[in-house]
Every structure is written in structure tokens, then in C-alpha cells.
Length: 140
Image (tube, rainbow, N blue to C red):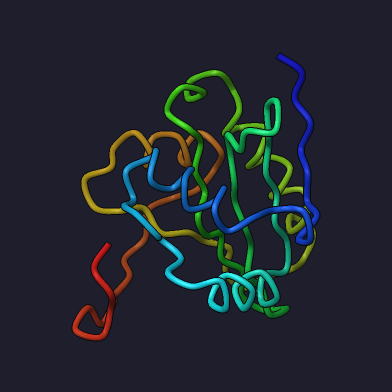
């Protein structure tokens, strides 16, 4: 398999991202509208994705403000997991921010997702305490 990491915001489609997110178990229409997707892309400092034969198999993005940095929507199609695709994608994204002198570089892992926790731990992420205000959040 020939792997190339892409990062053009102009060449990735909402339908491809939603399909990938459905495949990883995040539900239909993770991004509910094209307008939301466009806003997310504009706000994202970095994106990266991998395709095989025009099929989106991995995606991730970073949002940063010069002080704080967060990774979002990191996912790998189930048929491509445990094949080093996620590590390639994350190392590519980490290279974009590792010298940024941030106060915090983080991501969220859904509670109980030991596979993801173990994966990010191998990349150097550590568990910390965080809080959310769930009453205002959309269920996914």
C-alpha cells in the first residue's frame, strides 16, 4: 500500500469525512451541514488525511491559538487500523505543533475507549483530569 498524507482543505469532502466517521462508529452525519463543515475547516489550523484509491481511510485536525492546541476527529477506517496508519497521521500532525511552545497540547478520548487511550499513550499523551458541561452538548 502506497501512503501519502494530504493536507489540502480544498480537496476533502464532507461526504467522505462523514462516511469515515460512520465507519469508525461515530454515527451518521457527524457534521450535520456543509456550512458547519466549512466553518470547521476554516477554523482548523492543520488538517491531515490519507486516501487509498480515492477512499478516505484516515483523518485528523488541529485547532490552536498560539497558547493552547487540541487535536480533533482523529480516526482511521476499521479496515486500516493496526497498520501504522494512525501513527503516521499523528506523527505528521505532531510535527506541525511540537515546537510551538504551547501551554497545553491535548485531545479527548471517549470514556472507556482503552484502545484509543493506549494508542495516544504510545505517542506520549498522558491522561489528565478534565471537565465538560454535557447539558449543552450534542449526543453522538
